[in-house]
Image (cartoon, rainbow, N blue to C red; front, side, top):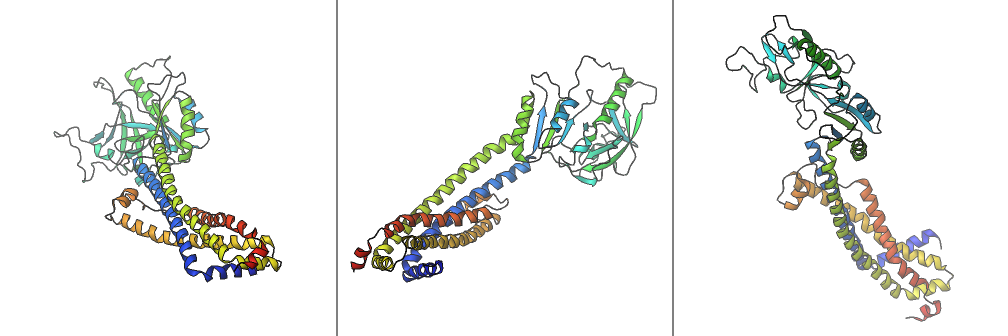
Length: 439
């Protein structure tokens, strides 16, 4: 028997019993729908959690701390270079502030800034995701005299001769336009009584950084400066004020930031850094438990859908067994006419597989409609507490990727084939003589 003839016979047999076939297909539709929707809700929940974490901070950043750590290895430039050479690491920067507070004052005319000055690796800022409100991040490698002001730090300029402090108010223009006005850095004298003119260095503001308190270091109230240039200025401060440097003291940063290519690589890189004896902190400690919880919920939701498809499998099995009882004489005639046993088995499996595949296609189509309704209710702040909880109004609450569609179709078809396997074997074992005699 040709494959074309088996297909025609398969469709003809299914259409002869339209009501029974329709009810069996509907069972598969419900089961497929349940699996797709339940898994899509789990994927939606996982995406919502990731977006919520992204709002809390960069998922691919690891903060490394040196204080309170028992280790013989300092967090120095050599150690940071070893971090840069780790697989999947894209950027590393130390977070350095001078040992003495108030070493420097940034002046512009009668106004001055005495806030925090942070030394960083300028080459790493772009990879770490820093953005600007004005200007652009420097990339030419010549960072001497270049500074980056935080969006809030520009309001820290004040007039020291003003009686009320003289700070600008938010919503008003700051006293100093850091992008246009002249800036200079003054190295302070600790006794405040020096008659000599204090050393000054011209500065140029390359950009005003966007305020983002989720970043480490945060650019909000700080001024960023190239770490090598800041160390050079600090050495001038110590020389001016006679600060002696302990030659036995090992240079070590208190903390640094490591950027990883993908959040999946964070755990592995973090474990390597911990093996050096440093303390670390990242969003992985929050993300991983949330991911495990989401995965458990996906398994529970998918299991509920699988139960529905199992019920549908029983329906397919019942339909095929009933079909064998009704077509016993037909099976006998086919055997007498010389039809191969394998062809008879294939025909019954084709019928079962067709029921599964058809139910899967319809189920996937209905799933898309239900997913659209769920996302519409979630985005529109619908009254459903469940949809609101799953979606949270961030990115929808039901996601149906292509692999879920393909998987659902393959799974529903396999359910049909497996359900029809036993009845098909039963059909080929029927005696031709007994089948012909049956009325």
